[in-house]
Image (tube, helix red, strand yellow):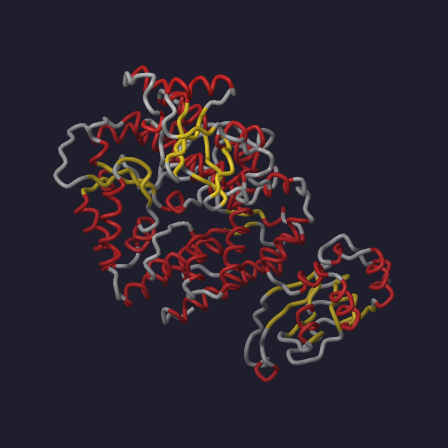
Length: 608
């Protein structure tokens, strides 16, 4: 019956031809009746079991308790699923595996398994049941292997231009002549140990608007506050940096050594088959209508990136930068210039964390200077929200928007509200505070936001009771591991409640306690690991799990958007559409969530 064994699925698809033949020579078969224990905790396993027919549950009920305690399976296995690999590698079973119906299994002996593990590193990594390793293996062996060029291309991939260099003392006339001769659109000027940049636009402003003489030293008009990037960094990161800084050139530096310049045009040309030139359209928008047309193309950009297999974290970084620029540009177009230094537009929730991909609800607010007199503010902010809706940013069902006066506050009123929510820390106050602490400024005067944030961090200092209450929300929703045993009968899973929210809110709580200023969950995880609050392996698993949850949700959102402009169920994942490998990754990721909840419960003295 070994001829019925298939190598189509991971991890067995990782084996080479000779290894497959070796496996088939040693493969055995076994039959188990309904209710029979295939492998009990503490037993020495025969090997790895691959189900040919039937259904097996895994649980941790001890033999002595089995008559009294109901068995609550961690997971079920069926239809070519395998189990017992980790137990075989350890030498002892750590859980019980029970046949829930008549079951036939292929059995790969432990000795053969160890031989295959020793000779095939990818196969070995997969059997370690490490979520990060599995995700990487799946990515490498999936359908989008051609994305490696897109994801791994670096700044020094033939795009770095040698700049036109001049020294301090070169006149505007001389620099202009050199730029014309060498067909350069910018020039770097060296002043001591520093480099400054001048573009054609700078030259025009100096000569026409400022009326400077042509013999003026070019160093006088150069900008010495250059945005730099390493030649070893990713081109994708360069694109994100340019979008955030709304610039079109980066100076490439290796330490203190000037390497050259990389331009936005070259990067967009490199990525031309993968994305649209939306960043330029946003920056060049002169009217609200121009900006609306640019913003409406963001969903097409997302579809393009996802279809090419770009990792979700890269997509989130890029889209966060673009969404921020859209809102900042709209703010600049609509808010009177004399009012902009006195107000700050903040985005909150997933947008504040930089984790919003497809446009979901608006979560924004205004903090303004105490005593500000602006008679037309309410009407202008109402129009601002309406414009964002036209751009494709849906209104918030809870009306957490600048069009709602409740979310337009003076600095003093805003800090008072934060303090009240923290002191109450129950029900709606917890959720409003969770949204607010993920805020970041996108337009206006960021000093107003920073003053409020710093006051709030001081207010929470040494407040253990607050953090215990605040963390409890991460344990509110059940971890839906029971779905995995019966995927065909359970059609949908709320991925936000089951997976995303527990990680995001748990990490948010720990970051707030440690006064970490970053709002992005992945960055918070990195900083918690650096600070010793999370073990490196645990941090890596949390990041991989969160990335997988977001990727699954995004894929299903895009599928629904293709048939309808609106998606009323953005957090539901259709389990029937997942293949065996995707179900296994989902199960492993939810186990990570379950372990993290235990960690939070112990840290904040909560009951799971």
